[in-house]
Image (cartoon, rainbow, N blue to C red; front, side, top):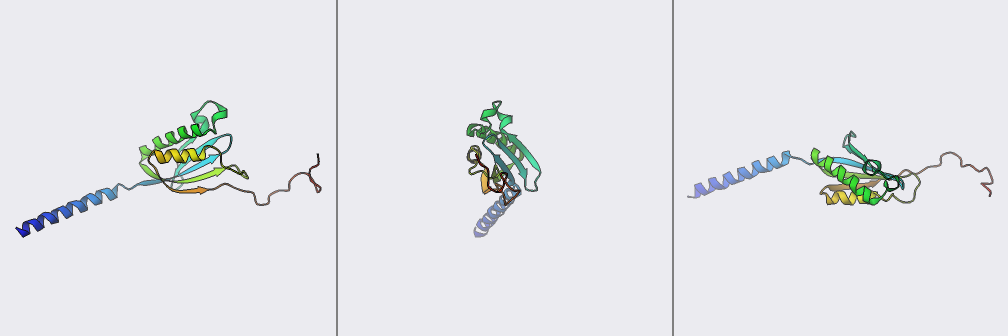
Amino acid sequence: MKKQEEQEIGEEIIEEKEESKKEKKTRELEAVLNIYTSFNNTIAHVTDMSGRTITKVTGGMVTKHGRLKANPTIAIFIAKRIAENLTELGVKSIYVRIRSQTNSQALGPGAHAIVKSLTREGFKILNILDTTRFPRGGPKKKGGRRGRRP
């Protein structure tokens, strides 16, 4: 009686190990989402970890009104398009890199809307990084020695 129970328990353990191996084989793919936001447009570019383009969606691809390209509502539609393409490929987790115009004080209006709507779609955000460029010296400003006078 005890041997039979031990065999059944041993068989259950073996089945559990086989199931866990199957789960490990379906690993989650990762991607990098590069968001460029200005006050005129929003561009979302998704690459795999090696840098090859998976998909690219801009505000102009979603709306025909030029004044709405940087709108947070349009950014939600951009995120939906990205989500459709990524779910087809099996991507589950994303690294986000947000960039705004050089030397600007704030991000454009679409950046947070894209990240928020992608989390609602079920993607796991691993990291958010601000990659905005800022000038370090550069060429001499115009205006001469005494500056620009009115």
